[in-house]
Image (cartoon, rainbow, N blue to C red; front, side, top):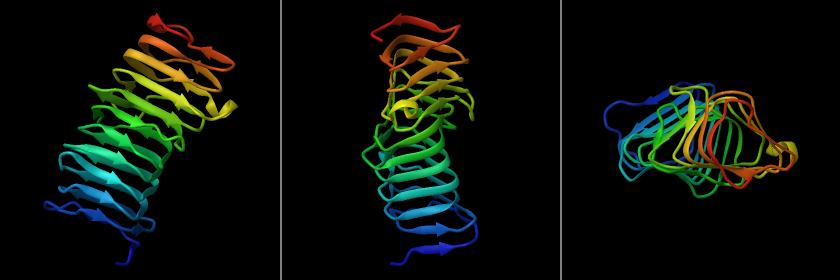
Length: 238
């Protein structure tokens, strides 16, 4: 069928929606909100000023195979299950939350800020080489590991939610950009009781925030400066 093209807020949040595939849905200059109770797959192009998709199904509750774009924010939340990001998701602020992990099987993420306002339980693997994340805000992973691949310079600010930290059992950050496009600037709290691994073709510089790490490993081309006040139990290969 035809894609839906609208110019006013769309809020499909009443009752218990049972929507499987979500095709093309464009809301111009306004917001699109959908709360669903059935495993939801975005197959078309969904866009709005702010896009909020939440799903209460178990298993893989919300899959993006098409694209989701928000000129301001995109919020994707699986309250009982997981997220599968296989398409293209872009926003000034991208907010990902899940009760059973997040996977990325392809596509790319583009965000001024990547964050998790309510946190994620289980592993988070955002490992596409096409990801372009400018800043990593607050992102707490409970009972799992965080893996992020980024093709642009990254500022770890840990801001935007409470607790204001990037936290996971283990955190693997791979910067695939060349030179300054691989730079990592850390100004927010990072709490990783296991292993923090940062690999970059650029520099790593920490200017502040709590830095509580079990084992620190990785590599940088020109500079790795973790500043003062770092609490690192073990320095691995670096």
